[in-house]
Amino acid sequence: MGQMYDFSFFNPSGHYNLNLGKPFQRELAQLLVVMNKENFDAIVAGTRADRSKDGNKSCFRNEIYNTVKFLWDPLWTLPKDGRLEFDFNFFNNRPLSNKDETKDFHKVIDWFK
Figure 1 (tube, helix red, strand yellow):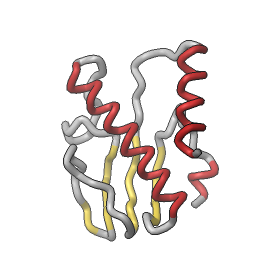
Figure 2 (tube, one colour):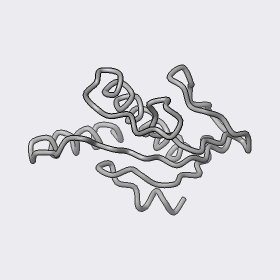
Figure 3 (cartoon, rainbow, N blue to C red):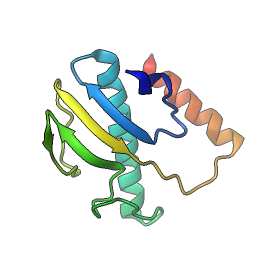
């Protein structure tokens, strides 16, 4: 659980080992899935470069669910329980303005309400 104390919405890159049966850890996984989807959509739209390890337009790398390796794809759904381990590499191609940072901060606050 240590990495969650260090979690930053503005730079979520890091190694994660999450127990999806625990509400806070599952919510963190859901947040990263949403961020990955936004990244995926930006790559498909051509507004962001694909920096994925396997060419799947994903921020997820080295994905393991319950000790079984898998490769993320857009149809993958987050399980309700089990152990999910992965590296998350988030590359934001645009510099944030103060207005954007404030908007993103409020997104995080809304997420946890």
